[in-house]
Length: 267
Image 1: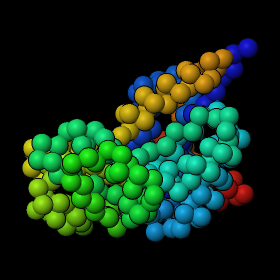
Image 2: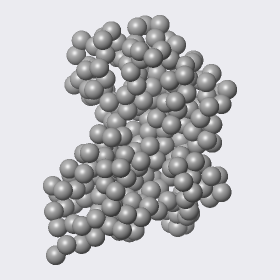
Image 3: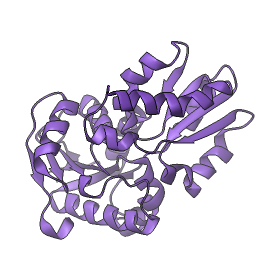
Image 4: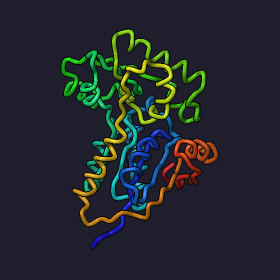
């Protein structure tokens, strides 16, 4: 018997909306449920145990809302919690994020790739394994980017401070010959227009939102064959303050949205 499902997506804050855009484009008829854990943002300076606990709580909430597939739209949460979630919820497709090392290695002409990411992502064993698997003879330069997530959370996508931080974080990478930049955090694609203003036109920017959406589509078709799409609605939740979340999420989503507060047990 066929049954309607929903896709649950969560991030430390609003950055995962960059992934949600791609999911909506490739799966236009699905019911989507998005949680911004803005009451706990950023994840980059939290312990793996803390992030794992938050990821389990958010996944449980999404399942209770009807989600039968989960997207961890956060590189840091993927590194800290994907394994635990897949063990605990082993009947659900759980799709994570990872910095796009493989396509960046393919794209570079100079043989030097720069990675912009949170400290939590760069210090993870998962990222180290990615480098070992895909880097080959390409030189990978990593750059932690404290402050960028917070700027996106405030909607400061073109501010003087955003420009200053991007210039500061990218300059050392370009000085060493990087011609490809991996946007290793789901918040960073929202800064791509400003990054484009700052960096050379020859620099390639790489993010993984579209690839994640395609992978999600494949996993649903393969693992949930009796499932039918939902009602094409999109629901938004936050663990933070509703007013700023509504303003920022509406701006990033591209239309006015209604944001609800997570129930108390999940805050």
